[in-house]
Image 1 (cartoon, one colour):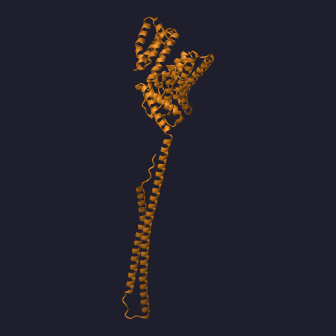
Image 2: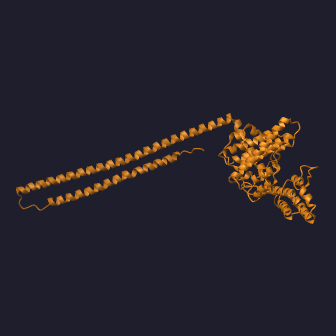
Image 3: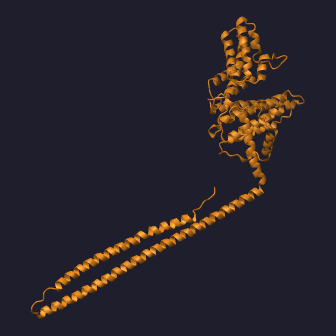
Length: 475
């Protein structure tokens, strides 16, 4: 912040004020002296007048010796009164002179005080300006000496801003919260590497970000007091997981990207262990790491020892993922996201369909995905719920139960009216038979079984097929 010291004009005005404050006291002394002078003079004149009246009495016809002595004494008294009057007059004149001198002295003192203040103010201004000049000189020297860091900081800010704009642009319009500090947590809701954040960016944008990250990583200048820090860390972690998924299509994915995402999120969770949104993100990263090692088990060219290590690491990361979602719920039970992901782990990796359904039933009773409603993620939740209900109905051999069948079909119709599911996922769940196309779709056996349930089964199939096209269209 630039220092603005008081100007010379301000110092002068202050001096004038000091001088003005010095005048009333001297003036008061002078006025009191004048009043005293005239009061005393009036008193003395009155006394002299009385004396004269006494001295002017009619002389007797014949003066005795006593009369002569008395008259001489009165003459002497009159002379004494006259002398006293002159002395008092001179005394009062001295008082007036002293009061005048005091007033002049006090005015001069005020003037000297104002001048001293002005001099001090000018000296302070000079020192401040000198300090400012030195600071500006040092800043220029720093920029020249560390020009690369200064440029890198500017480029990093630009790259991160572009990343955030790209991420928000991927979100459906009615799921985007206002970009304000109050909504900083909600801004990251719906983070999903399946949205292909990395692949959607221009090559120059993503490569510029990677260059900046290598040169001056965001973690090297972490600002815990900055309210945007956790949001930036979450978007960056999503970027690296998305990069891994994008490059996996071309058989060039690197586990280091997943580890980088883990590291960035851990930076914040170490500072704020109760931040449940970060724990949800960590759970997804660990789930992806688990899948990476599980895929290695069936990959060609992997030795038996490496496969054994991959199995162990896959189980470890799956357990870590479950733990993070559980901790997230402990910190914030009123959210759908942790329940949704725990249900996936129970169904896909623990083969525990009833528990998965229980988690989704709890999630369905909650409005907020994390902080607010997210229609896209609600659509995913309801779609999974319909899948799990269909699988459980088949497992229970309850396709003849009209109530249970209607529950599944109604869920599909609700999903079609609210959100979207990736088209490839819908095709797989409806059409994959598990032989020619794997894995078997979640609705395949349900639809095949309904075909054997007569008219009621046929009507249910018609409702499912009528809703199917809308499952992949955003409403």
